[in-house]
Amino acid sequence: MVDWKNIETVLLDMDGTVLDLYFDNYFWQEYLPSHWGRLRGLDAETAKQKLIPKMKSLEGTLSWYCLDFWSKELEIEVIELKTDIEHLIQIRPSALEFLKALNDHGRKPIMVTNAHMDLIAMKLTKTGIGEYFSHIISSHTLGCAKEEVTFWERLQENIEFNPEKTLLVDDNVTVLRTARSYGITHLLSIAVPDSSGPERDTAEFPAIYDFNDVLSSPL
Ligand SMILES: [Mg+2]
Image (tube, rainbow, N blue to C red):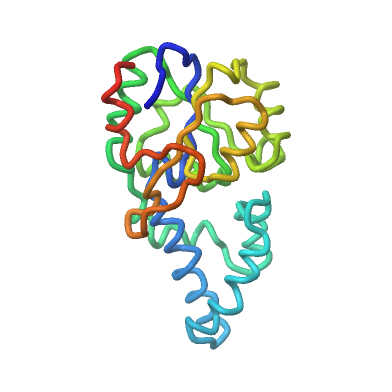
């Protein structure tokens, strides 16, 4: 599934790839709308009907991923609210074994994520995965989301990598398409990024169920 002899650089997304997307989905689709509604005397269903279309309209933009934006917009300290349910932050199946194997073989990966820095900090503290990465790059630092080609151009200004010898694993098909248009050759998606959700259609991209699927081929 992965042609390791032609890969020099491994780029890994965080949410839905290394970590279970259930935390994020539950937070944005259930926990936050209910909390926001409660403060305004709305039941959870009404609150969801008001908030979810607004969130959807910004999907894929840097604002959508920005905790500061939502804190201001919703008048809620979003990061504080996330700590209420931080016990739901979990590593995906075999992801830790995969990170260890990459490190053992001298292929320390780079994290490329649309997550906000405060959320990255929370998740690294909770899971301890930070030590396995050589760099942790947030799109908020580079000023554009991974869905934009500019992100990949700016990434290359910061980190030397040969796109043709780079593997990107990301659960987001739009991100994979953008990375491909930039020239990244080896692309993998995730079949079930949210452990409580259904299997997803990953379109033209091969998908892994857990990282054992790629660990079985020699690194
Ligand atoms: Mg993701």
